[in-house]
Length: 188
Image 1 (cartoon, rainbow, N blue to C red):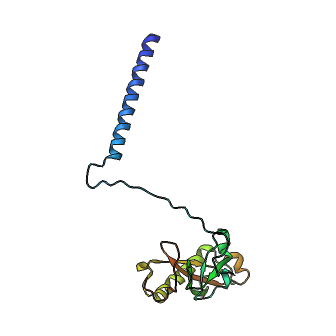
Image 2 (cartoon, helix red, strand yellow):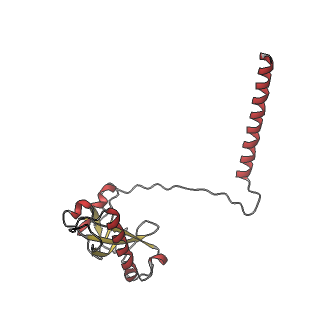
Image 3 (cartoon, helix red, strand yellow):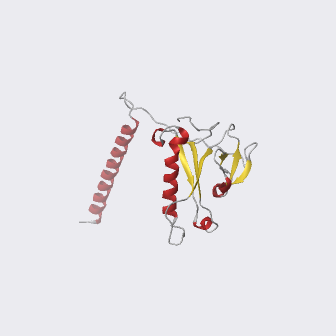
């Protein structure tokens, strides 16, 4: 085969490939934008970006996470997400808030020989189950039928060494955002 024949074959192959790609692209565009059938609806997604002001909500006081008590309502720090394991903004439950403490339980799950820390997975599992078990008595409906979620804080290996055995059980709206008033007995 000559150079001219090779060039002609390569050019023909390139044209065929380009035509096939163009046809595939055209079919894909038609399929994706087809609105002829009544069941096809166009979908749009809108992202809403909000910026929470730095610092505490009006009237809030900063309190250590481990000093929270049953019935307290609070917001997590927005300007320092890492601080949520250390401190929260306590507000009155009549004010808008994200979380409410519904129980504080002393850890009574498995430990290592001599009372040592059993590991994050074991402590977390026990803590989450303990909060789940107490949820219905507080809210008034099982968690599986509720519009509220459970967030649990448990002792870390570091805090265990300081004799921390507190498991903090909180509720918050599953959609995020704020709620007002207590969630006790709301059957939400």
